[in-house]
Length: 152
Image (cartoon, one colour):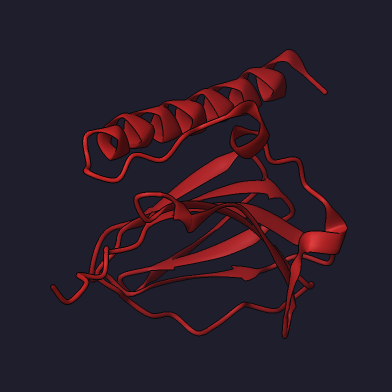
């Protein structure tokens, strides 16, 4: 792996750690404080813990119950498939392509990108990602789900 690729991976990991750290600090100010330990703050990929989809699988490094609705998921999509049609939702999200070739749809336009590329989807804008290549597409999804208000 080249130094450039290693630096990009390091920067992405630094971004993710900072993202989680800020979230943990925000969570600590809430009434119910979650205790963060080495055991629940380290999540190493395990194929046995993946969730199958119709076109591949997903792995949640941080699900919406871990930190205030903020998530980190890896999606793996078979060649020439997509997880779903373009859509929009209230949450904004980031994609970070780890391996493969992705076609990114955003607000009526498309572009094709490769590994070590980040893609941003603003709130309420039509977007989608699909595998444009002949190998698996692997990408991270970073998103914050809206908190559900409990009845009091």
